[in-house]
Image (cartoon, rainbow, N blue to C red; front, side):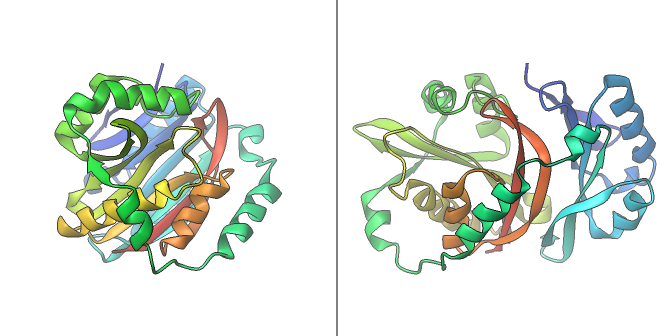
Length: 277
């Protein structure tokens, strides 16, 4: 069962046995520093292996004093002014140890060799991007099931997708022969003028054709129209294709979240990429 997303005090957290961690997704300013022992207690009660918090940089020292260390940063995330830092605390020596670190470094080095591509006209015309509607949810869920063995959020459930569309997420798709073959989502944080570019998935047989980059550019264009200032993504560190797509589109590397997410059947480390729109 996917992890739950709920309020803890006034803040929003995701937690559960699926990822075996707590992710403090949105920290309410009135919850510092009182939320720190609450997170610790929940982690110990549930036997979780990691706590990850996304917090304004002004709270970095407060978390560091409690044994957290910084894994990544997004400059000017909050209202295009204050940095966001990802602070982590581990409760498992195995979870703390990133066994495939050299592979992650090699993929980052591979991605770094690509320069931002400035001419996209051919691909953008060839792969027409559409915004998904509620009626697309069953087909979207089938695509996510076909691409991912496991996923950290319940995108296999059409009802979750519909609820997301009705609230804070815009899904984008590419169709061939009137069939969705590639998907991605913009999860908006309008209070902070930020957006997460996430949930990229392309059916096998349609990969290596530039669809992820095409989706990303269309997403950026729409988010700029909505007045958002900073885009970021939490991308699979073992996927050369998605990391290269972000580099080609001008994103900068913000750090790696070690052994962070249950995706594609196992716990994987994730890379942070960001761009000021």
